[in-house]
Length: 149
Length: 149
DNA sequence: ATTGCGCATGCAACCGGGTTGCATTTGCGG
DNA sequence: CCGCAAATGCAACCCGGTTGCATGCGCAAT
Ligand SMILES: [Mn+2]
Ligand SMILES: [Mn+2]
Ligand SMILES: [Zn+2]
Ligand SMILES: [Zn+2]
Image: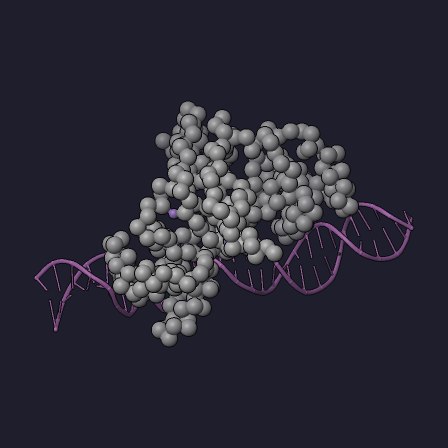
């Protein structure tokens, strides 16, 4: 669950206007998807999420361009994950999801919020600058465990 | 410059034998190049470095396979850099890398061993099956912090 | 020193994420 | 309502990385 305050349609439209940009359906939908997502999403994941929205599909290239534009506009962040694919996340810090760790199901791709708080960041040697710490817990959710009995 | 103690030919050969593996020219040359390199190297950079060695060229695919094999053998680290390209670096020999966490530089892709042990796995809700946990600490290494001018 | 097995290598084709060029559409200020 | 710059769609392309398969070679047993 994401706070409706920042992901509502008017909030998204005003966020786009605030940076002096055109409010287009693609931008609105992509930023909405980003803000509703539980974590950083890949291009493919966002594309699939948008495909289930009953609106006309957004072109592959347009999605890449909108995502990069959101980053240059300061509305999203872009970072390569451990596999080398770029993941995008809404720029506004999400206190909800930062306060706990997530479990990612390798079977269905689902992301589950756990009750446990993230572990404390370890002390870094002098000169290192910490940008962030991601605890990636992988496994299978109950449904997937049961399905391949 | 890297210490000659670990990058000398006999040291490389014994490091390969220590993991119970065949000592092949490709493995010796690639591990030697990694240990002689100042930082994490991409596949293309390693390929170019090897091309200037007057030995016969190593095939593109073979280089990919040797690099991945070195990682699974615990002799190298693999991490995506800021552009999403994988970079490889020699692992500190005679160290159990599962017993501590790693810092991944988002600037150069370098991987640094930290003193801290990995945090304990959180308790999972009933029905979940844990497959693995990766603690990804991201940031910039001293060299990249400084080059930010 | 020779043999034989199985891992390692080379080569070609392939894959997928990401980009580029260009014609067409569209948001929006005037 | 108009005009134009900006955004979109489409096709082709790029490049890092992978896969399938035939051949080469390290190495241990003889
Ligand atoms: Mn959450
Ligand atoms: Mn380590
Ligand atoms: Zn699942
Ligand atoms: Zn660095």
